[in-house]
Amino acid sequence: MRAATFPALSTVLACAVFMTACGTKGEPAAGGVNAAASGSPALPGAPDDLAQDGVRITGMSGWSHQETPPVISAEFEVTNHESEPFTYTITFDALSTSGAVLENTKQTVPAVGPGQTVRRTVRLNGSSPDLRGDKGRVRIAEVRRVPAAEAPAETGPCPSSGMRLTTDAGNAAMGLRVIGLRLTNCGTRAYHLNGFPLLQLLDEDRKPEPTVKIVKGSGGIATMSDFDAPARPVVLAPGQTANSGLMWRNTTDAGEAAVEVPYVRVRAKPGARPVMVTPGLDLGTTGRLAVSPWKKGPAR
Image (cartoon, rainbow, N blue to C red; front, side, top):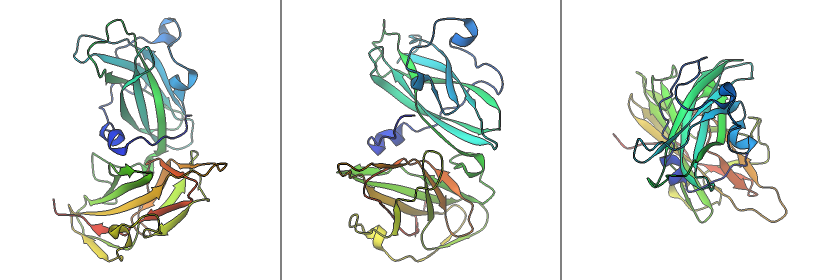
């Protein structure tokens, strides 16, 4: 699996709109060419481009010029080798023949059961309509998977907890990173907060990352009033939101290994249902992550 990267957050999150899944469970998805089933030549791309962490591309079309801009698609399957259901979020890149990234998108496959294989199709648009003669290809850029019971409910029915926790687009400048946490009361009762979200940092295997210290407030990382404001009681009526933030620097000292934290388990308060988000923290060698107190969001 590739090491986590941190491009401009506004670009990444703008691309992070989940596409509607195609196909049905346990059946081949429509469209494309399934190399494994048809005996056609091997699919283009390095092994890591075609298979990662239980996700495998099984078929690929070239650029279709029936639409403008042209579209390329790939069949893929997700197999859960674990003993509990997992929700998978896969980032796909559409590449030109030369290897240039023309587009990317994320697709989520929810609640894949133990031992289950789910098949889907992903479609990506080319950034230029002038791709005639370019075969192109699709690769798996990144796979993130979280226990289905802890998966963020960004859309759809309100979770049984009555609270929906998500991350925002964030910001990055001169090595300083900030990502927002958003808590929305989608239930029917008031929700009380008083303090900071509880965080557990997890590595690629979703095991605790012990080398990073979580500090309440700015911790000297940067001067930001929201981070150093005192924690105050917050009451969220149905439909209201609260915001918190994570802040860090990605500075790396020579000779020391940089720390990447792909997963963060978040509890809004003690005893709250945990939600595992995937912000991809590139903490460098700084060893610190700052968290701000919950603050009531503006009325919508």
